[in-house]
Image 1 (cartoon, rainbow, N blue to C red):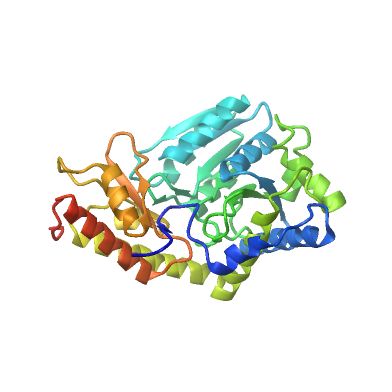
Image 2: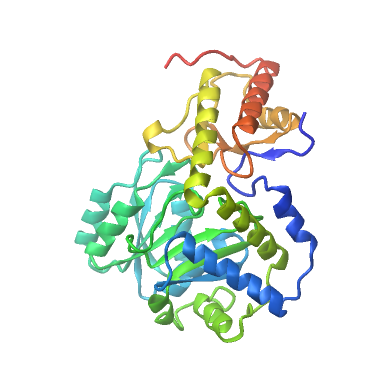
Length: 372
């Protein structure tokens, strides 16, 4: 039995003791030391994706969705039109945000188990010259499917359109290079693969695009240009910052760098993912995605087809053994999800697999080798 539950979720996630300890100090929001802390976090975030000299990091209070809305509302002009390649819940959320913003959205629907087709994106852009932007989810957290970022970015650039990327579940674990991948804005958050705590999103935006976006935004609180301009002038956040979240993120990023950066973190998550998939397949559970389309962030499993199965009962049984699972996000197929990220490694994943196996036996669910 593990004393504190391990979060097998895509954020919030399990953090290290060092990251938790960083939140024990209080910070003055206008104090020079805190301003320097913010500046160092923003500088290192840009470095992770090789964006120095072209892109700037604008931090924002709130969850990652706050920053997605801020990026769309600031960088897409009021007369803009956005193509949203759609293969999951977070793509659909982007379309919903655009509706609230009064920006026209065009959904390019795909199956939830298939990556975005670059050919279909190319065809859509050829057919509609009024489209100004493409909004892509890099890793669709609703299923765990990985979309082809570089290929989509190249297609968008060939058509001289602009690309906004939700990299919420990939930033820090999967390689992204802004020197070679044409992206106007990349959006992520503190409580994902950087292994900080939730409460701060950020947008890595091309500086020239951001400078040209003055006056676009629908909202004072979510105006990225205003936030960036104020920080450039004063070194401070416009409104009360999440001080403890920033401090925790600084500690988490120091550990990220010590671990070896994107390559090492991605390798650990891939090992976690493989151990998880191998272990649950051995129990007879089936993954929703093929291995070729699976990102090493979160894995969706088909629910057991058995009258004894209820997710709430599985969840509670596994939680009592020290692990927290995630419900499915699909509407037509019953599933549950298990995250591979956070301050965990294969020993914790193996314990989680055992906890799921024990709970399935307690619920009298079939536990058997997967015939495939």
